[in-house]
Length: 396
Image (tube, rainbow, N blue to C red):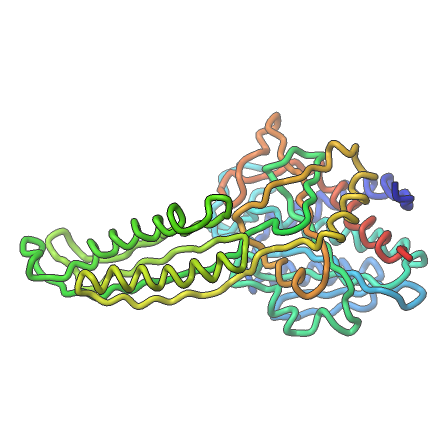
């Protein structure tokens, strides 16, 4: 059992502040790389707390803060994401989004609020820190991705980061629980576009055409066969066609169809295999039907992989905050996260913080217009990230 500084009461005392911050962000959501007001609020709060080293405009709208202990030592990075989603909120909450068509539907408002309160606690305990804490407020996690541009802007250096931690609210887990797992915890995410070129004509004379709609439909079916018949059943993979655009009216066979979709996997080898087979299947089906198919695949986020040793460390810390039976082992999910880039750059752990409370109707899924969470989870998030940083920097 780890011996940790007792900050539970301090974290609980910040409940009103963290809730107020979270509700402010929720009322005024901003999309990826448009988080100008959010970033300004974050930077001002950090400076008001007494943080001298605050950098803004990192990878457009990112914010970085440094809290240095009295002596040089290791550097630990704590990360929160700031962006919202293009959704219209229907929760009816008194703090609901005031910007139609934009909503915090994934908990990033909670992540940002938590990290601001973590900064406050760490500043109070700065004299006990055995190194430096780097606070990362990241833009555009929901797309096109802000982690990689922040890394390219140098956030892992000056000073060099030795470890990284983050958390994500989870309505798949009950409030008061945490899920900590080593290895892959979230899937890679890539996008594909298929453009089928056929020969258009009259809907009553299909034999005089090369119908890209029929060919596209055949391709959709064959793509599903890749997962069901070519991927090991014990592996995990998803190919989803999300859009299919073609045609202008009922009696015209168009010359062109465009399909777009997502690719998910939990292993780099599976990821590469899916890319290869999508190209082969789409072009092969089109060729067999006397059409052509242009395939474009955009690599987005790699698999989110927790370092095994750091996950065990995070679990040991978490088990001092709640009863051990409330620190769960969780299956990987096929959702994706660009925290994966930070975890590729330094060993670390991404923890899921339970936020669901069905008794209060706060259990709806992420990325939906009814999403909300039980704010009772926020102080535990403050305590977890603070303890992770302080304990890591205090390790021999």
